Image (cartoon, rainbow, N blue to C red):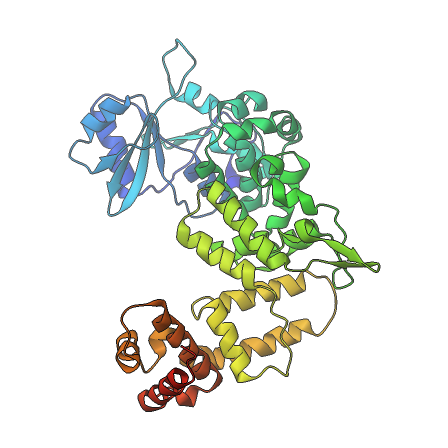
Length: 449
């Protein structure tokens, strides 16, 4: 569709099929005497040929007026000057137009304060015309991300836009314009003014791009990474042992590329070797990173807490980091596999294997570890659903243990259940009430509990 638009045209005709609810919003605002336009990513996506997901509206009505016009529609307001209207569970943002201080806002002044030219277009549904005062259509054709008018002014208005420039480029396969790039190193310290929650959300979007490594490298090169996850820079240029072709930092971002596009897996890949620089040792000319997974899990927790991730997200990622050193070989018994499943958690074992596979690929070495991890996956897939890994899987519960041992609630009950679970993991056929009862009596007789 983009090929049909005029070059360097400030406006051009285009018929865009808009959702019914968006049409309703525009029509009602118009009937109340307000101007309203579809703005932002929806127009960009239409011109690129992508399905538009976010439909945003700019209007010269103020927030209070927007709420009054749509008092009969479910709405909420989380952002300054923006009211989100809800239809069938989907939110549509209606935002008051921005303008220069002391001047009345209109659509042109609003577009002048948007981040990038490809997002600074507005659609007039009544006239079926796209307003494009900053030639975003031309930048789409050139696959270019350019800040509107003055990059420094746009980034000072919202420093998160520096991250967004790289993220949008990664999502669309575009390049960031040189004039826009050049100001980022000078303004990168301003990213500290942005809330950790907003940085977190943008970081996740970067990690979910098709090839995050290039974007992460640009965050490093242009000075943003040191204010977001400075711990990653500790591994930049750090040589590893003979198992690795790349430095710690290069290996980490390569692992992210090779991890499946899942938020938890990509985060675990980003943080899996974060502890290596802290534990690096050189003994007899050989480089070692002993217990880097434990150090990394602790650092991952601190980083994720700082970026305001949820407790559940932190638990899952740190668990993967802690257990990612799976050095499987063909001598592993089924009991060893059950212990691995128990350690990782049945719900996390597939993610752990996927992470380890990405880790091995990012070594950059041709060895048999990749074939071994594939073999491990086959064995795990066959047994993970039938493997006893939790106390809840035991034929005896805590109440029965207390009755058999003549105990009340106390730590010894948990210790007894742990012992029984260890027995069952080694020998699943022992998981019957009769056998476990007998084992408890034996343990009690030996005063092991």
